[in-house]
Each structure stands twice: as C-alpha cells, then as structure tokens.
Image 1 (tube, rainbow, N blue to C red):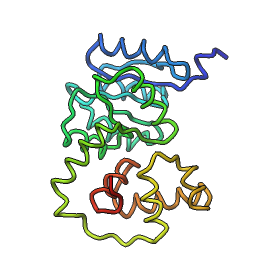
Image 2 (image 1 turned 180 degrees about the horizontal axis):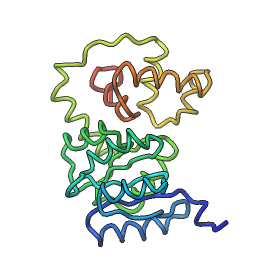
Image 3 (image 1 turned 90 degrees about the vertical axis):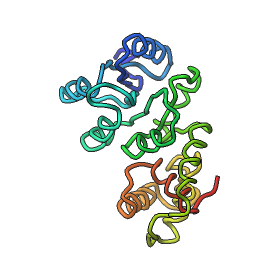
Length: 219
C-alpha cells in the first residue's frame, strides 16, 4: 500500500482556488496527513461524498457562495457524523464562531493562523475530537458572557455527568477522562450521549460552551 494512503485523509473546501491549493500543498507536507481531494463549495463536496469519497477531516470555509459553511456543517452532521469538521475563516466574530460550532464543527481556526497551528488543530481534532485556540476560546467566552444573566433552563444531571462535563472542558481525550473517572471508555461515551440528548447539543465543543455559560466550568 502507498504510504500516502495510510495517512489521515483531509478534504479542503474553499471557494478561493489559490488559497485552497496552497492549503492542500501545506497539508500534504505534514507527515501524518494527506489531501484526499478539494471542493469549491458545499454542493461539490456533497456530490463527491455521495460517491463514497469519505475523508477523516473536512477543513471547511465558513463564507462560501451558495451552500455556505453553516449549512454544509449541519448537512454533514446529519449525514456523515463520523467526519470531523474543522471550520476555517477570516472572521473572529464570536457569533460566527458560536454558530459554526453549534452547526457541528469540531473546531475553528483562522485563515491567518501559522502552519504550526493548523497541524496542531488537525491533530487535536483527530485525537481529542475538538480544537479551540486560546484566542478563539476568549472570543467565545466574550460572546457567552453577554448572556450570562440569562442561563439555560436547569437540566437534571447526575453527579457523574457533571464530573464528566467538567473534565470535557479540559484537554483530556475521552480515554484519559475515563481513566480519571475510574470507568470504561464505553461508560464515558454513555455520559456524553446522555448529555447530548438532555442538552440538545451535537459536539464536545457544545458541551464546553454549555458548561461555561451555566457556571459548571470557569475559565
């Protein structure tokens, strides 16, 4: 088997050809990653996915004509939840970031980021299921703080679910969280799925946002 085929497959979706090609070359230079294919927009991505061209990660531009990043992320969450979406944008507006994460993205990275941060983000999304830089986390907290006087309706959670929720806000992987809680990874997944259902949340990032907004975890 070709060594490249063993690498983690990434798809780059961006309507700007020069940027898309440059990102593809950069990602191909990373030892553990390779670009599976590129797409100009959400519609082209959908067509390729329907041909069973399923990647591990999709680096998804937020602002695209036609089917934008929000719509594409929501569609991916419904049809290909196993694919990890890393949002890419020039915008650092907290509402844009929060909306993208609520749409199902596992992380958010700026187009102005250094190559080292892109590699860190790709690794984090694969290993820990989410990525947020300190800068992006600060923007999210700033946005949430505007509405802290109106917390979400109280949801009944078990002590173990609350403990899991707090640990989810750390850099620990689910396996490491299971070790901290002295339970199996399967049990941790049960806590996660129960909270997804109770809180109507789609991702780990969403759990972190809920915990911060409701005072369960403090930055």
